[in-house]
Every structure is written in structure tokens, then in C-alpha cells.
Length: 411
Ligand code: GLA
Image (cartoon, rainbow, N blue to C red):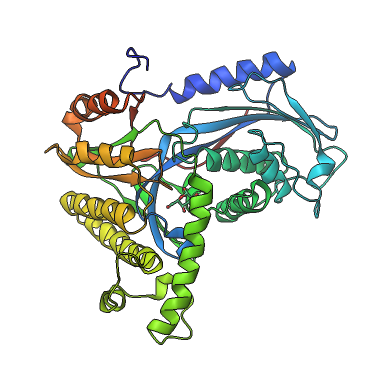
């Protein structure tokens, strides 16, 4: 490990990134971009593995994003190019995205934007809807901060602008989820794309994943002398997709077992199970499926309580809920890892940390920590440094206030 690597990773200011992207676009394609779209990654404060169970989630957009500069090419070729990759632009015929065509992934980063076009973000004219594109991103990849949702949403916004598609933000998030589910082949829920599209600065985003109703909940961090620190374990989430799909299956099985156990034939999702009903069941430690259900039901309640805590600026309570969420993800849902547990344990033993838990799908990636603002530097010394020493992994931390969701400019 590089011992010189800073403990805190600070993003390049937004304006500098925009300027650099415009220059790169001009150099690569010898023309000016017509517009730029940007979509952020997200961190989830609480509400993990419940979006695909019709539950409630509470993420917010972070200060890192994918930017997408574009210009129409007037022909039928899309030039996918990323300043983060050494490859030259990949030229793909627009025919590939025609309605009804099947997914044709390449195993490359541009599978995500291609999926978005395929899912419906394209103009009406197959002969002349080509594009020059340049992407640049600073959302760490494979870290559970939704870099894929960011690239999807940035793509969808850029195409919406270029072809005046008139899609609402909410539908745009759904289109991006469809791209990921059906084109890329990852069975994610709606949280990440929704957070990237619809977040609002200074607020967490409460999403009811059953109805897709949402509410911006003020997150008065600075006013309360607090900050959110994201700690990256530097473990890439390798097993995540197979385990993720397995959890989804287990939740479906839980619904069908609970239908019988609770004598409720119309039971449709874990959202409809109450905590007191789960509590009446004697759940053995080896009853994996019911333990999964217990996590989901408890976690949905914790989100509702967290919203109440935020509305009352009760951050101590929020911290307690975060700790309970982590314990449940570790013990009942089993999506934590030794490294994530270590990060949470180191953080929780600092008196200036109010709450710590894994965030995102788990198995690696990041933790989210509620920290007294004046002690953020100490977090680097007390949590990140000893974690590095014990694991020899190049962990880093990020500090992010809640930011706006998608943004777009015409040049
Ligand atoms: C990933 C998925 C989300 C959500 C989280 C777990 O980030 O993309 O839809 O299920 O895991 O909460």
C-alpha cells in the first residue's frame, strides 16, 4: 500500500471539472459540446436492502458525479468516449438501440449509457440521432456509492436535452433502472437512480419505493455541528451481484412463508408485515429466510423513525438507529464483511461519532458515519489510519454534504 496516500480524498471543484471536460471534448472531436449533464452518486443514510421490498429509504446525493458533454453528430453513429479510460471512442450504430432490439452488452463501461438509450432515451430519427459524447466521473467505482446510477442518469438527462424528450425526472429514474435491470442485467431496486435524479441540496430524500412518492427531509448537519463522513473500505464488492440476487430470492420466499405463518393469503410484500407480527414468530438462528424478513421489516420501521428524528433534529436518535441498522445487516441480513465491521467498530468507539453503518449493497464498499464536524480530522486519525494499518488496505474517507440531484447546461 502507498503510505503517502492521503487519508481524506477531496473532490476537484465542480467548475474545474466542467472546464476540463469541455477542453477534452474539443480536443477529441474538434468541435464544441452543445451541452453538459451531470448526475451525482449517492450515500444511503438508512434503509438498506428494502427498496426491492416496497420499503422506505433515505439516501442523499453526494458531491461527486458523472458529467457528460455532448453534441449531435447528424449521422447514425454514437461515439462513446470517457476521459477516465485510455480507450479511443467506441463507435456504435444507433440501429442497435431501436425499439424492440435485444441487449448487446460489450462488458465495458459504456454498457450503462448504451442501456439507457436502449431503454428509451433516444431521439425519433434513427438516421440522424448520432452523438459525440465525453464522460468524466469522480464517483469511486465498485464502492457502493452508485457510480453506475450516476452514469445512467447523466446519460438520460443529456439525451432528454438533446432530443427534447419531455420525460419527467421520476420517469427518467425508472428508465435508468430498466436499463440496469434489463440491459446490463443487474437486478437493482430504484433507490440509486431516484436519488441521483431527485435529491435536493441540504436534504435527505425519503422515497416510498412502493408508490414512488418522495419527500425532501431537511438534514441540518452544519446547524447542528455535524458532518457526514463516508469511509471507503477499499474492498471492491466482488461477490455482490450473486449475493444480491440471492437476497432478493430469499425475500420472495419469506413473503410466501409469512403468508402461511401469519395466515394472510393476500400478503404481497414485506412492507405489509408489521414488526409486532415478526416478533410473535420464534425465529431460530438457522432460519435464514425469516431472519432476512426480520431485517427488512425492522429496517423499514427504522427509516420512518429516522425521518421523525431528523424532523426534530434528534441526531442522537438517528445515530442509534444507524447502529441498529448495521447490526441487523450484519447478523440477520448477512451482507457485511470483516472489513466493514472493523470500520464500524473503530468509528463507534469514538465519542464524537454518533452513528456508523455500512451503506449500499454491502460485502465491501463504504460505511456512512455521523460525526461531530470539528472532529472530522480526528476520524481520519482514529478510524482510517488504524484500519489501514490492520488491513493493509488503502482506505480513504470523503466528506459530503447533501447535494442536488441531476443538473444540466446548454453551452
Ligand atoms: C444497491 C442497489 C439498490 C439497493 C441497495 C441496497 O445499491 O442498487 O437498489 O437495493 O443496493 O440497499
